[in-house]
Length: 97
Image (tube, rainbow, N blue to C red; front, side, top):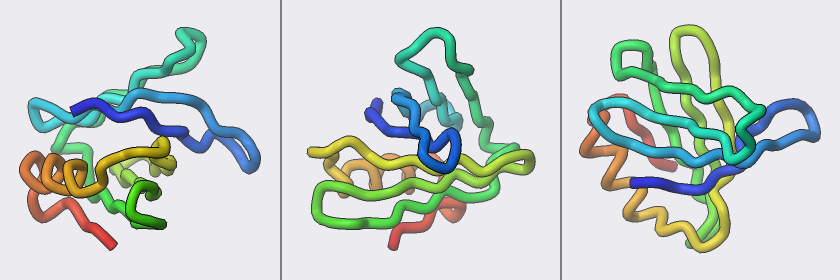
């Protein structure tokens, strides 16, 4: 599963990233090649939480041992599909509010 998100990079700054889930990892790939790519392994991952804002938008918080990533889903994101993908891949490390 691949999703377009806006990753927070500062107080008023967001960057466009592609979030991909697979092989017990989260891949955050920038659309701008000048930005850093992040690969989060299940062993490094503490939790993933999705906060539903409306039926098609929400915020994601990924907490690792070293860093916290916060982003907003692009409009028209199927949050139910996102929920099932994260739940299947990461089980009890995933929370949905």
